[in-house]
Every structure is written in C-alpha cells, then in structure tokens.
Image (cartoon, rainbow, N blue to C red):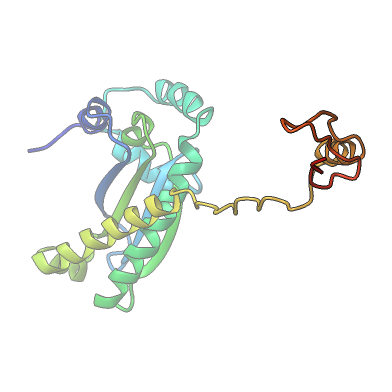
Length: 219
C-alpha cells in the first residue's frame, strides 16, 4: 500500500514514536552505473545533488516550499536536528559496511542534509536512508533477493540500536565517604571539658568522686 508523504510522518507522530526512519532506493537518469548508500537528515541542502533529490521527493506532496521553510525554522530551534544528524551517522556507518560486503564497488556517499518534507514534519529525530540505486542493474537485481534485503534491514536496525545505546547515561559510582576517626572540633572541646571538670556528687554509700576521675573510695 502506497502512503503519501503526509501519511508517513503522520503515523509516526500519532504513535508518538521515538525515532523515524524512512527507507528509500535512490535513482539517477544520468549515470546508470552509480551505486552507493547515503543517509539524510532535515536541514538546508548540503549540496546541489541533495537539493535536487529533495525536490523530486517533495513533488509528490501538495505542500509548498514556503510552508516547508516555516516548518524547518521551528525544527532548527529544537533539539531534533543534532540528534537526527547523530542517528544518520550511526545508520550510514553500519549500512555502508554491510553494502560493501556484497558489492566492493559500492560508494559511501555519507551523511547529507536536505529539505525532505517527510523529515520536516516528523516530531522526533528523523532520517531518510537511500539503501542503493534502483537505476543500477546490479543493485536492482540485489534488491530482488530477500536475503540481501534482510541484511540491509539488519544493518539499519543495528545503526539505530548503536545510536540508542549512545544515549544511555553512564552511571558514575561515588564511594561513600568513610567515617573519620578524628572527632570534630565541637566533640573534642566537649570531651576535654568533661575530663577537666567531672561532675561532682556523692555515691549512695556516702563516697565522693575524686577529681582525677578515679573509682569512688568508700570510707
């Protein structure tokens, strides 16, 4: 079932997802031998190629670019952009490593940014992954192999997991301070005073305590 761009991010937003990953296949009408992987996050276009790709993707939405720019302005004020960039780096690293196993000539196009509508409307860290070039005959053949698709999916999942692990705070173990055997100044003064001025009084047998603190003497 085909989902429009508005529906894709809408489902993620409605479900209050923690992350949004949009998986695509790249294509070019020029260089049919182009092969490689790249990952995008929402921001101003990093290069002209990224800008063109975003324009093609956004052509399927009824939204205008001026509205997209307004959405981007709000997005850049939040924390999603740097988080999305980190997520993209993690996924791109794992995906390229896996793609290179099946095709040594696969290129690492790296992490890029562009005004993809599907990313701009996601209310969470979001990335768009280009897993291969469907315009490349060899890539197209690979995409028909279920085992290959499973490997690519696993690589993306591992990238997401690696990103999530990086968010887990490191617990610092703080040793409990040992109780000092040296008495505090207040306690030391009180002890010294008791030794100098012991309480005076008589015992039940009529004996008095000596000033030296010795045991009571019975007359």
